[in-house]
Length: 524
Image (tube, rainbow, N blue to C red; front, top):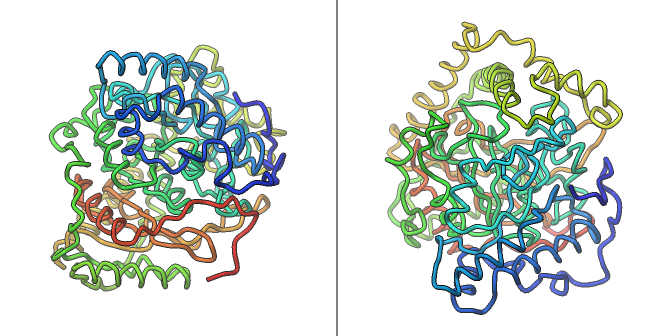
């Protein structure tokens, strides 16, 4: 575990070095994409060892010292040795796959054999299972180096109704590199900040509802929540088997497509992925710069209107889509109804069942084998675990009656119908559009350790509840804070969404690197 600067509020060493971002360690690779690094390695311009060393130097400068972003929770002690091995293989003419020798980072609820998998929680501090999640195995097979694990909202933001996104007892508080007094969102907070700050070209996050797309939007990244069942969830600390999925977080759409191609596929350990092999494809090969030309896209204004500056950026994005030849179709108001309350009922019931099953498979050093054990453990360690916020969601989940409860089954069936068949599917069909477009989320809100997060609005709930894909790409800034544009489609439409996002990205180049400012700008 990273030992330095794990204070509860993450404040130690919070001043920036007296240097510009361009002179920080690793600046030469901080903005290099997966695709560019692949080309650099192929051309002999760098080595995997050099990449690992440069990223580690940058992590030391920005995560442990300087702005103390607290994006990383652990570093793989075998990363350099793995890089040496992959460099030797390259020299001998052997390539494992398109990620050969490229370091990436994982959210710390995804198992990897070298490191503990903690979900940021003291109860899982010693959860070293010495196994890879199948999705990690796929990335290794493609040649990726696991550089380390990223900090996250503890227990993936499922512990309290008043949580502070990006805070965990083991990792401290993740800070947004665009304005360090602003939230990085969650729960894949560290994954987003690590990529935005140039600790790696790509990261894996996980999403149940907004946990990839929100931190991606807050940190000017591309984030994709795939269709539930495209990517294996085995050996990932769960919330909900009906909504959970891992997803790529990158600085470019091409990189997200490359990563998803390596991640996707059926897995016998996850029954939801039975159809994944039939739907997976080479997503990078499908990208088209003219994808929006002549394409009917639905404008989901019912998912906007929560922030004036974000709405203005959305209008500019729509103008760019029109100029690129898209046929934009206005979608009338859609009533979300009781989806939100129904979603919470489903998540609470599934969390208890799914977490109990996961905890039963953890390392022998883990003493908490059920959710009830975790609740008791956190009460015992309240001085560290419950100092910022409580565990009311844990307690509500513990009180649920299981998956045979008629109330749970009704909420699940109603939610899938309202968000899926009668929601996204109906809107696409009735208006003859291939996807919906909306602002992803508001700009990052100020960190509030007293009353918790202050979400203004976002577009994640419908695709999350339906289990459908949701892509966010950078669409600009508001007062120096990034905002994202969302593309939402039906099940298995990742290729279409990525291509639409790619066309928008290549036209606008809306992403700008972070400056590690202390607070947001007053500029428009």
